Image 1 (cartoon, rainbow, N blue to C red):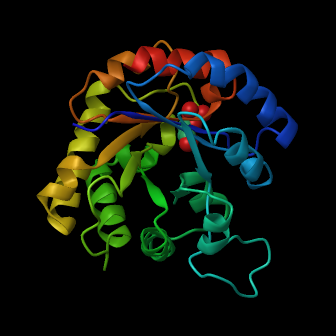
Image 2: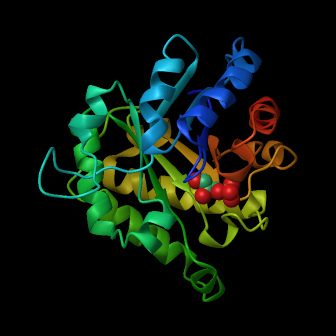
Length: 251
Ligand SMILES: O=C[C@H](O)COP(=O)(O)O
């Protein structure tokens, strides 16, 4: 049984100075924490500082996105080799905000996932339906499609190399958290689809995180569900005390 993974996605918040201020408050709070893995995804401008500041700690960090190629004329992009070169070990892929605002497609997520696995970057692939799709009864179809395209051509990722985050778009930043049952049901669909594409051993040992309005007071009920292996936290991860509370309550 793998430990839960509790991850902070800081989105476009915190300068390097603010990121380091967070860590000086947060790292002492979690220094003896062993019951889950902790990861932080800061902005690209803070990432190198966060990697350096967490290197002797139980906190890992990663990028919020990357390109799939190693180099090229792609203004504003960062490549897997560039992330590797600064000691980055994780990367978020296909977050719905990237899909909406940067027009990332399922095919691009697939290219990024293959590149991440080649470079030993542990990917968190984000999937999830919009409110409209849920209300049309299409949640399962959306999840099956996103997983099928993301995993197309991926050769049996080894245990623990792949993490998926179920983030219903309607729950992100809205305060409308999915019920534990809704989340568990979606996670079971995702695990079943991963088993179909990559095999049962990979599906059973990979972690599926829930993301969308996770707070200190709802994380325990989400984590009590058998299919939920962790959380991807946005707004409530921006303050050291509230992120620490989520980590404590999750386990
Ligand atoms: O990646 C994190 C999610 O988008 C959730 O954000 P939120 O906790 O602010 O709803």
